[in-house]
Image 1 (cartoon, rainbow, N blue to C red):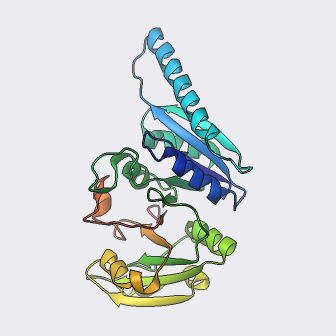
Image 2 (cartoon, helix red, strand yellow):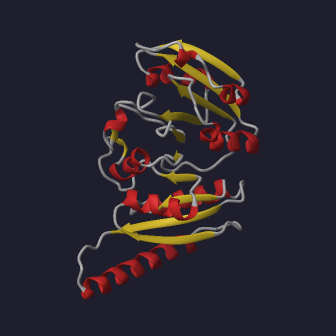
Image 3 (cartoon, rainbow, N blue to C red):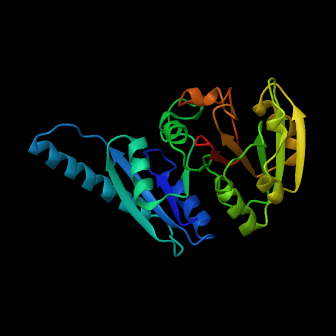
Length: 265
């Protein structure tokens, strides 16, 4: 993982999130890009000046955040973008190639009943970049066990698994697969991609109404410190991804969640 993106919002755990990203990145020799977005619309020259002033203010704020964290030798660069958060993420990805986004479930301290807030939800739902969702007040520790849950074993491109493979190789992480047979499954869904099988320690097959219910059933038994899921049109979070926010009553995780997108498949 060469380039890691950390969107910086206005929440109280901004420093904690960057600290987590630094600890994570230091294990892979990654470069971190912290990004803030703002919106100034219009065509007049005065608005152009306003835009530059807001951008400069954003850069100064990011510099302050970066300065408050021990970089531990990790290179941290700053980026600002005038526009939507999704367009900003896509722009920096197009220019640099982002291997992973590290973000908190909620960027602002609003609606305690939410697991995934509107901003974080947009980033995960509307981009195809792997994302690591880190709960508030979680400190980084090497992952020992990851539960990879899915309802279809079809993975058409091996590179989709790169973040999971990098984590396994770096920390000697045990990867447990959970294939959840949900109503309407096909025989093809049960054919697990060889690349997934190659990196796994075990495969468990269960039958549940939803993939999430399968995760809940086996979570305590396996005690993972990382949950890995796939985002596809009919995969984990199928219904949840139809909106940008996710309520805790619908899904909640107290450990980091790695989301691998296969939407291009």
